[in-house]
Amino acid sequence: MVYTDIRVKVWTQAGVLTLTDQVRGVQAQDGLDTLPQATVLLPLHRSVSPSSRKRYSELIQVGDLCLVEMLAWDGKKGDWEAVVHGPVVALEETEPLGPEAAPATRLTVASMAHVLAQDAVARWMWLGAVEGYEPVLSKLSIQEMTDDPASTIFRYLTKVAFHTANWANGGELKDLIHLDLTGLKAVGPFSVELQMAEGPHLEIVRNLVDYPLMELYATTDRAASLKGEHASVAGKAPGEGKAATVLRMRKAPYPYPATDEWEALPLHRLEGSWEPVRARSVARTDQGVRNFFLLYPALPFVDEYLLLATGVAVAHRASIRRFGYRPMKIRTHLVHNEAFTEQDALVAFIRKLTLRMAAQWNRLHEMEAGTLELPLAPWIRPGDRVRGPSLWGEGERVYHVRARALTWDPREGGRTTLAVERGLPPEVYADPGWFGEGLEVLPNPFERVADLWQREKRK
Image (cartoon, rainbow, N blue to C red):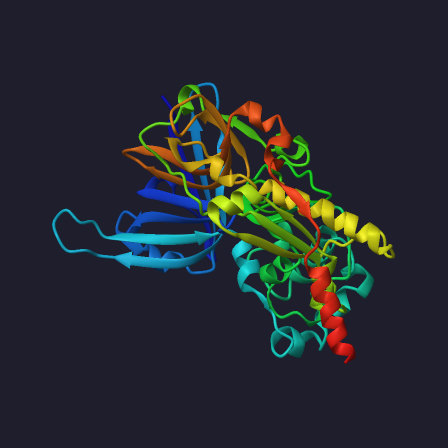
């Protein structure tokens, strides 16, 4: 049996408001494609004295900071885990009709990454009018912006996005957000000019991430173990331990060309008290099929026809015959570790990256994907691995966690629903060559296109 519980606190203008004993239910979710968010269900009123009551809508305001924690413990394993920490972004009251319907207050809480997704750079408005015409350039030199993506993003976030002139509501962003940034080792002249960029900070830095070669996502972990090359351990959250929001950038960790990146991901065994229960959902689909891959450098000063000719093509002919032509084309900021290089060296580097991308997205239709439901396990986070029974009912599988949903209420307790992908037997994950089967590097078909285009220009 697993004992579950929750703790909820809000830092209001009048002080810390502890809601734990009043909570009727909590729902939380996050994933590699979505920012963490939680919904907290409360009564309509809170008793502030024996003779008076106040509505929660009078005590809590949009913008107040909130911390949601969950506990799952079976007598041997378990501890309090931060689920969401960030601003209250919505407050709703409902008073339904009927004798069994209870009035309620619903809080929607986002993570601190929500601030990065909303707070924006706009040279024609706030930063431009208040701080100067080129606020980014004043904080970052050209040399600091021409570097590998993880270094550039780290400098941008710490020197621009975390600047207290933008957000200072109960603390500073640098004290409330962990950075855990790493990536593939290569640099190049970026097509994104940060000093001219406008828009939310999170979208600006996402433009430097080469999906699907690398991933950038937010999760929640107060005791985050930061191992990235550019890692910052923030200060204290208001009245509590370390900050809970983690902005993480990493190489796509799937096991090619080696298994070390995949094996480095946290692995959780779904056994004992945390065996999958209640329900499962699984399907085989061709939605993930990709069978022709082209990757070429994003050099802003070169015509795209020539860039395509510099790229490397990798194909899976048998897959094309079975499913049709399903291409994946990527412009990469990753060019080379050296500032000056011969073309052959550049092509060899692009070839290596293309093979990595192709093998990591090859044979996806042969891997299991679906959902698992189990007792509350708030320590399992998106980006981790889980090992448990096959979704199809035969043998064991290792899965990658794409997203999670956590729920809790006083009557039913808590449970976790995991959206998992890339399910394969453990022995398959020990063989990186399995992922590259059927792939071949093709003579670049774009070299002739570029040559013909150059001839047309000379006419």
